[in-house]
Image 1 (cartoon, rainbow, N blue to C red):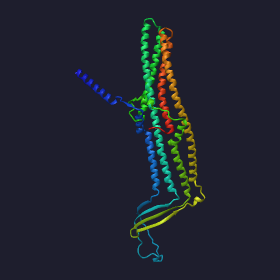
Image 2 (image 1 turned 90 degrees about the vertical axis):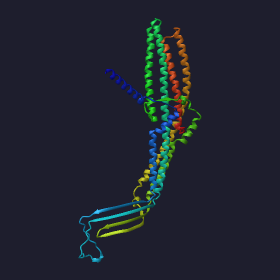
Image 3 (image 1 turned 30 degrees about the horizontal axis):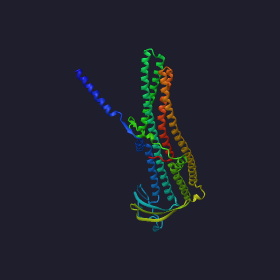
Image 4 (image 1 turned 180 degrees about the vertical axis):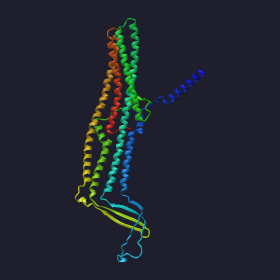
Length: 442
């Protein structure tokens, strides 16, 4: 009996383990930088917001266009009357009351339909449509600018994931080398060839490398989660980086060329230009507030009060004019607001131009700096490799201490990390320069 229970329990555990591995097992997906960017653009929450803003701007354009169309309203009412007294004053009875009883209606019904079509509104409708269209174009350019920001943020996350993966790989390699050295040193210490203090120094460095590996693995996990969230993937999925992106950065233009490209292609500058046009149009619309409005009107009325009044086919057509006389002595506050808005846009345009010029300069210099760092780190890794080789030979021949050997090993490890980080930083700096100049190639 107990044997059967044990077998059943073991089977249940096996099934649960199989289910767990099938459902919760981590999936690893290999992605190139371009694939990652495409995926982030498709799933970006920021771009969804941008799309919604464009839809909102389109709705405002439609609303402005609808102002040119006629308004048609229909209304009706049914009224219940309580003991209504009706005294019709007509010339036929000379002001007296007849011998008959006055009608006493207990209900009333009426309905009406009105039609109005604007003919002239001082240009307010025309300027409203123009302004709404300018703002729609600005919203579309903002969406393109947001897309370039998504591209850069994805590239940054991709580069950070690459650097984290490289750090883990390099530290693991160094840890294996350190453990192997500890094993050799342990044998030497047992045979009385090495001082125990030197062995402890080597083991202490191994412990420090293990701590560094824990930090590197933690950074890699966080970088993976961040990458998955940007791409819209399950956050526990693994991502395999395609290192070929390292060679994607190219330097083809001078600083002045990049600056010229930025002033021509930056979508936020173009969007601000449309907002400036919208502000100028708003100024014209505000001036039109002092003009009268003229419209064509029409209507139909029908009413029925039992035993008293019946009206039908009461059609009216006419032309209406409306003019606010108070505008002659009241301040046109809408015009004042429009002028202030135009001044804000003009100042913002000048400020943005200054920011773009400085941003291009800064990102261009950072890109050049990143490229120069690669040359320096390449020399450093060659020097660190040679230094470790020489120090190791000296230590083998008892011409250097264990401290010298461990320091040389640490310098070699750091130089390997520096060169991999520098290669990735060049790509990131180049992508930032493209974003700043509005020439992102996605």
